[in-house]
Length: 68
Image (cartoon, rainbow, N blue to C red; front, side, top):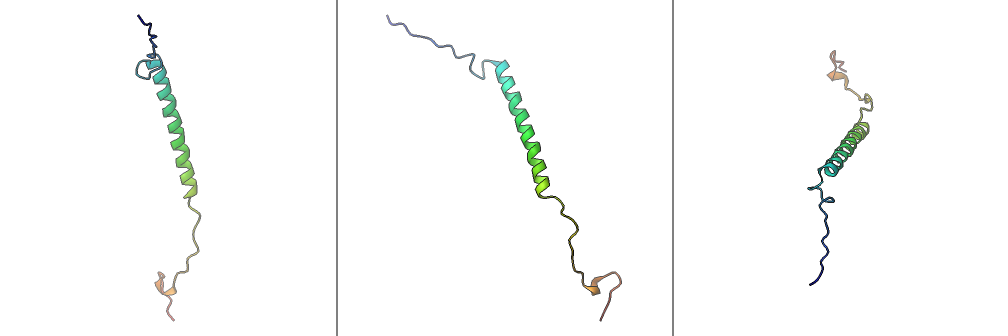
């Protein structure tokens, strides 16, 4: 008769140990939330309003048009 070693991996499985899995999922949510906030801030910084552009407006399209 052979002796077979039985390994109990139930404490390492995410489905069996709810304390470890809930802690892991909580930290994943926190990291993803912080990454989304930082990504949104970076995107808003890159696409920020850079000021009023200097646009040349023809004189005949003004409120009081100026004709030649």
